[in-house]
Image 1 (cartoon, helix red, strand yellow):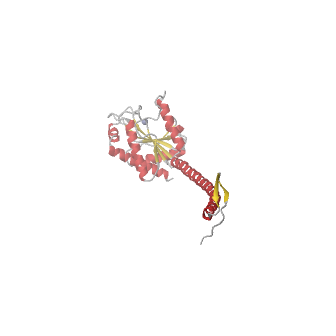
Image 2: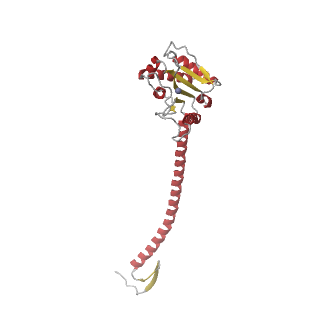
Image 3: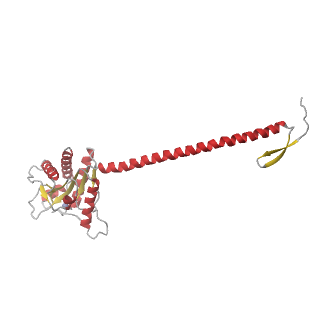
Length: 274
Ligand SMILES: [Zn+2]
């Protein structure tokens, strides 16, 4: 049974709204009260949530910064490692507008240099040796509007070598002479480099495996820009004479280029062991 209570009106504030509530309708009053309490609870519950969100955001931001800096440091380190890991630089001489020597058979030195250099790189990479080339295509390193293309090209090659600082640089060239009878591969080194001398002599010896009749000896030089300006041991391998028919024909033959490249790669590996 329900007992009727005397009718009363009460003012109840809820938010900014003013409402008249019948006190007898207990359910409604309770509901409003509970609603009020819930709202307070909700409000009080909301503050820790905002705090939590703030902390979470701060943590995410911190994690992001850590991850970002780690990735950046790895990237930077990777770039440095990549540079350091170029144990050898192969420099195919000439290129682009500079053909180098022209063979008796019409072959251009720049093309033979690049072919042999690419093959040397291939052989070295098979042995997990990191290799860089100063040029990979038929073009010099000078800028388009360079006033002195040859000087700018040489400077760019030397700059690359001195930046990377490999353990060894081998510049690939082909020789030429006034008389046709002169032939044979020859290695050059900078006159003031004892290390260069040792490497060149060792390379000359290994090249003899390809041509036992070649009696040439490694030769000192004090004028070649590549030898003078590089800050790491550098040798120039003149693979043969394009002025000699026999060698000009051999040097344009892919099989011989492979043999020459393999021999140079062996010479490089021999010197990297030291
Ligand atoms: Zn040359």
